Image (tube, rainbow, N blue to C red; front, side, top):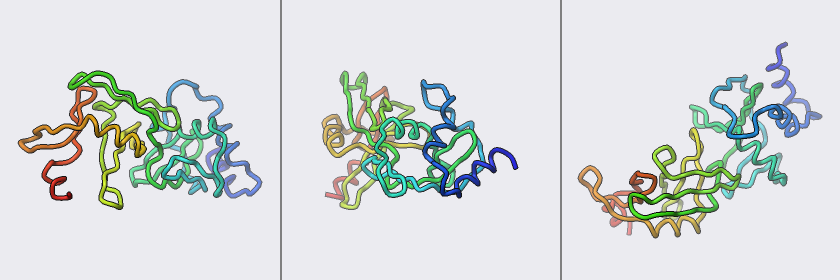
Length: 206
């Protein structure tokens, strides 16, 4: 039996301290920057009872994980899979978790400059710093009440949902521009015009 199989088998051992085992597997990784999870291809070991709620709270077996340092550590080993699932991946095992909305929440925003020179950056609930630019675009989805929820791309296929307060603040910089011959609402930041929606669509929705 190889090491990967032993790790997967360990998940079925009720005495196995799962969170401590995961922490130990990451103990020798460099402390600066996100781990290279896209290059890790361990065996899939099924699901683990970890859930990220819509407000960014992490739960393990139904109870909140109250160690912020542990949440931050585990947030660095999240990966979006081709099938749309979210996994926690270490060099030796890969496990599916539950994400209610987005894995991160943008909780702070900094704005500097105007127009094309404007720079906008976000801080997530796990202290990722994300500039709004070509590599980190913003997208909007409709919520259940017909409103729009903005998400900023953090890395890979992982996004952060902006809090309601940040969403209202962000609207101060929305403007209308012509894109491919049509008027769009959006905002300029990081040298990019981030389109939100066609102006005509929003008029119809009013």
